[in-house]
Length: 145
Image 1 (cartoon, one colour):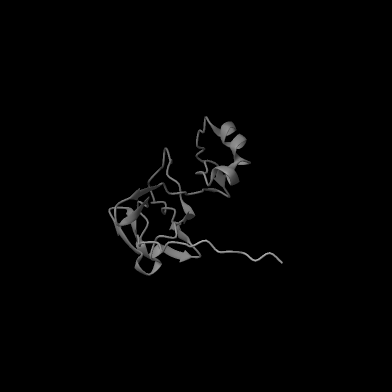
Image 2 (cartoon, rainbow, N blue to C red):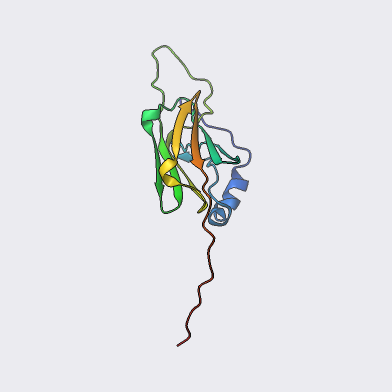
């Protein structure tokens, strides 16, 4: 017996599927090769001295998560593994998503990538992105040839 997730907004999701490059990445709600695509939710909060990126990652061990910074983009990726079936246990409903995930965030120029740090606590990954004073950019004169 295979469980099927009831998705009343599937047609609406299909309509917006082609618009995702313009709207940003949206959580998927469709089966992906027998698994559900897992797109963790995130909050971005700005404080006086830093940005905080909080990502919900319940039941994802920190060993299965990577935080990378490259060319102004912070990427968090990893995997929430499917739970093993327990003999004698029968699932009646499954709503949680499993599988690999990746979230990317474009960061402003006013941060110090060397001081970025991350911590996992109570199923939430918190990435601290410290701010720095941006040097004032001066206009550059372009010579016309």
